[in-house]
Length: 258
Image (cartoon, rainbow, N blue to C red; front, side, top):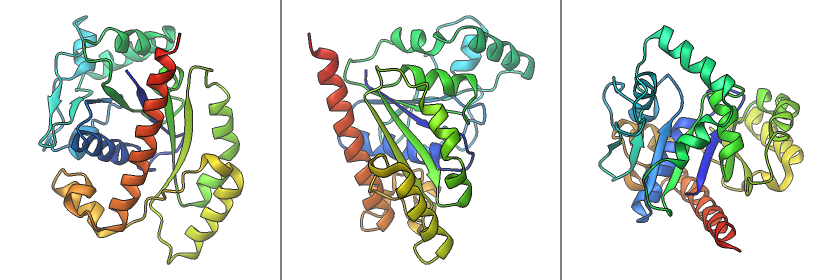
């Protein structure tokens, strides 16, 4: 199964929103997908149509020692996903201790899932260096580093380079995605200029612009390419999805090689 992790050491960079859009866009292309919310905030389900956070999820199953994939859901776009759930605070602390002690826990759990080999798994991670974010970095085929058009993203360059220094050789591709870009704002244009110098070809050319269509699509639990296909943000998301689909194909070919 190709695995894609959406990661960042910064909060509010659009990790969850982009993961949800990619899930729905891949599903619309007829590709089997499974999204996994690795963050206790339970926001992935909200972007995919849940009105309230799911009380049951993979984390609540893990606390009880049960198979963690029993609470999978599917939205109207036929995008399957596993919500985090709402374990009690003391239970969450116990899980966090286990994740810190077992760095291969997530990889093992993903390997036990009974889904087709061509299912693309999207991992919506908490802010790095949370234990599950670190584990996602270690066990994914493709990493998308999410940054916003701000000075803090430019200043985080050294921190992110350190994060990527832990990436194993099994990771096939790394890309940097810029979100929330407004070309009318000088600070955003300056940030884009700096980030291009810092990241070079790792920065994807598909910059995700801010427009009202994104908010409207979120309100209807739809991918923006379904809700407003002519919007700038729809073209941006399609570009990112096409890049990801190519990386997944390359990862599958590499796994099949003798």
